[in-house]
Image (cartoon, rainbow, N blue to C red; front, side):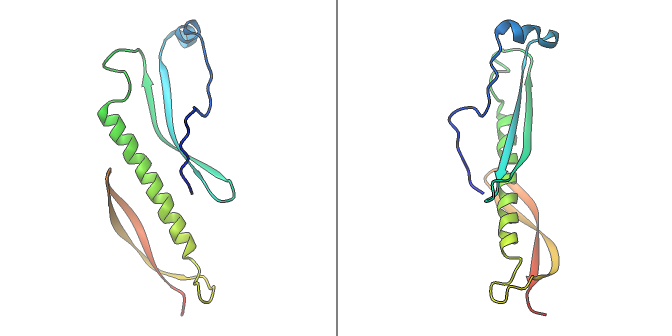
Length: 130
């Protein structure tokens, strides 16, 4: 998993102002914020983080509200941390010495404190030798 910052939009569909105003009898814009997780083989998994709809452009609705921004960042943080932990656990499923699959000894809840809030996750303990 790696992060890729893009300076250009992934896809653009330009419409004229008249097309936007007459589509479905209303004007407005919809946004979808997605987290795309790509593994080493190139397989991508898309997770939708948020949907934002704006009917009209006014000072009160321009851009994101502080609450929307915080919620989106928190959801992205949750998605990134979950994928990192999933990747780390997958790498430890087999014993590095003998190569045998480790047997689960159970799960327990853990709390991870992040800049954007606490995350509740499940952790597991494993043993390679019987």
